Image (tube, helix red, strand yellow):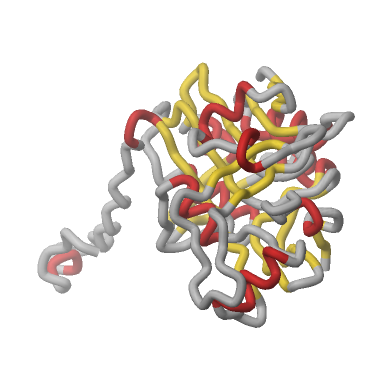
Length: 266
């Protein structure tokens, strides 16, 4: 099982079927085939933006007191709840693997996605899709590396969502010509930018990631407190002398302009 192996010490803010007629009716006419159920109605993203949150939870589950102690002790990791607080987005279902991530894009109308944000964990060689945290580290149950991404791009990938078949061209066709795909995860653009470039080649959109760690900054916590506070949590990108007070922001979209952001044009 892969892990995000150098993450924990940097996350301490203090240091920092519907529509079917009579079921018998398709068979009333001799030789007539049953009608197919209609395709699901495609979504239109608000302002052209889609945000997907990977599901990373504490295993075993922990209470607020324990989470505060881990934060203050430099053994805390951000997860799904923190992604929700930062973005204001909640998801009924997060993608459980890479194919499910592709499937999340084809829920939208063609040429409708201008910006796709993916919040996840990563390291210099892997992009996590789903996993968990414990006090020792972040672990990936599902992840992809540059060679796997390139393999998907070269294979003429096809997949099924529900009862519909899709291709990689269907995925690419969901994006506008000038779309960007922003990956919020540690070290995705670490030099050389193999991960970021492979992702760009797969989706054929301009891709943005960060060459250093993304740092989540919860508000101050009470020692021995019972409730872990997240309201107002901020995010930043690690730099020399990083401090949550001065180097993090609620305007997470603006981080694509951070000096540590790397853009790979399509």
